[in-house]
Amino acid sequence: MIQEFKVAIEQFEGIERQIRVCLPSGYEESHKHYPVLYMHDGQNLFRDEEASYGVSWGLADFLERSRTPLIIVGIDCNHEGFERLNEYAPWENQTVGPELLKFEGVYGGKGKEYVEFLLKTLKPLIDEKYRTKPEETLMAGSSMGGLISTYAACRYPHVFSRVASISSAYWFNQKEIESFIEESDLSALEKFYLDIGADEDSSKVDAKHYIQSSEEVYRVFKEKGIEVRFDIIEDGKHHESAWRARMPEIIQYLMK
Image 1: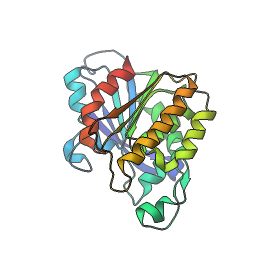
Image 2: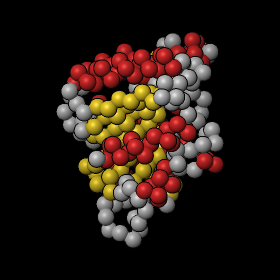
Image 3: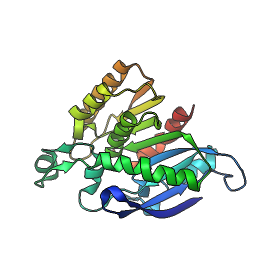
Image 4: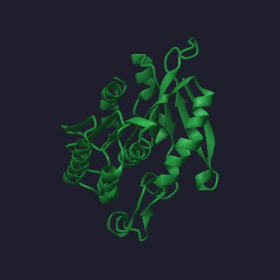
C-alpha cells in the first residue's frame, strides 16, 4: 500500500515536496512497529508509470512479495532545472556546469539543507504518523542520491546508521566527500554498502571514472574500520532496471 502527501521544506523557502510511503504487507492488520528506509528520487521507486524513464525500482512489488518488515519512504527529487544536482550535492562544484552540463554556473551546495529537512521535518512526521522504530532508520540512493546518502551517514551516523550508496556520483564532490568521511566520527554507523557497475556510463561520465571514484571512497571507509561492503557489478549499468535487480539483496544486507 502506497500513501502520498506533500510536505513543505522550510529550508527551501517552504516549497512543497511529494512524499511516497510504501507500507509493508500486513501493516494494517498488525500492531507491529517497523524500521524505515528513506530513499531519494521517490518518483522512481514504486510504479513504472510514474518513473522518470519508464522503469521503477519495483519496491512496492518487492515488499508485497517478500513480506519484508520495512516501511519505505520515497522523497521525490526536485525536477526544476538542475535543482536535483543542487539538492543532492553537499558542496558546490565550480566546473561541472561548463564541462559536463554545458551550462555556465556553479552547481550543488544545497545538500546540507536537504538532509536537515529529512532529519528535522520528515523523520519526526513519519515517526508520528506511522508505527515506526525510530531508532532503526536506514537510507539509500543511487547516483547523486548515493552521494547525499553518504553525506547523511557521515553527518548523522547515530540516526542514519545503515546506509546504501548505489552507483554513486562521488565524482561530483570527490575531494570533499573523502575528507568528510576521514574527519567524521563513524562509530555509530552500523553498516555501509556501496557498489558500482562495470558498465556505468551516464553519457557524461564513463565507467572507468565511476569505478575509480567509488574505489577511493571505499578505501577511505575501510581505513575507518567500520563494516563496509563494496561490490563491482559485472555489466551493471547506470539505470533503474539495474538497481531494481540488486535492491532486494541490498535491503537484506542492511537489515541483517
